[in-house]
Image (cartoon, rainbow, N blue to C red; front, side):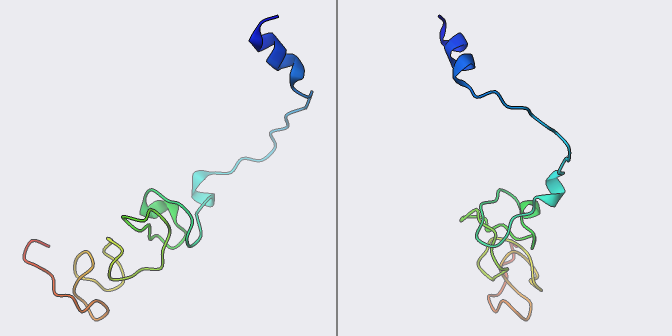
Length: 85
């Protein structure tokens, strides 16, 4: 008996029912869950290094809050922006 046949016979017989579909947009991740991009997170903030959904901050690697550039400027982040930003 081949391995594929053994595997087939060992599987329990189940019925697959596909009734509802979920779009990617509905699967937004909560705080501290893994992410790859900002669009993965419900709050739109995926930490650039930690790759987890985080509360926006002045060290998250994203331009958010009232920042003038990434993690600098504005009333929230007191770090001055460099000329390269």
